[in-house]
Length: 92
Image 1 (cartoon, rainbow, N blue to C red):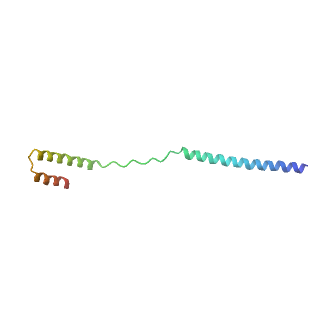
Image 2: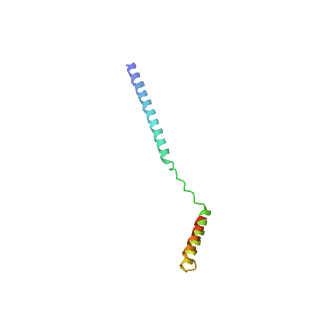
Image 3: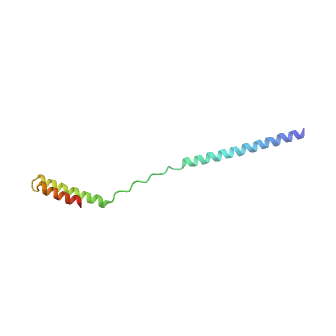
């Protein structure tokens, strides 16, 4: 009878040990999952701004073309003169 009791105790201890290890592994997996969810999502970098020199040059061309158009509408420049000056500005 003693031998049967010992087997029962050892068997119960073995089952308890396996259950404990399994619970620890499950807890570790849960912690890893929580840590992965807690990390912030990567943020996409904003596209670089265009160089200011290009914007300033474009603004300058627009202003020059606007002045030429006004001179053409006023009759100060002929259509041929307007076209020639416009081509010069756009080529630069």
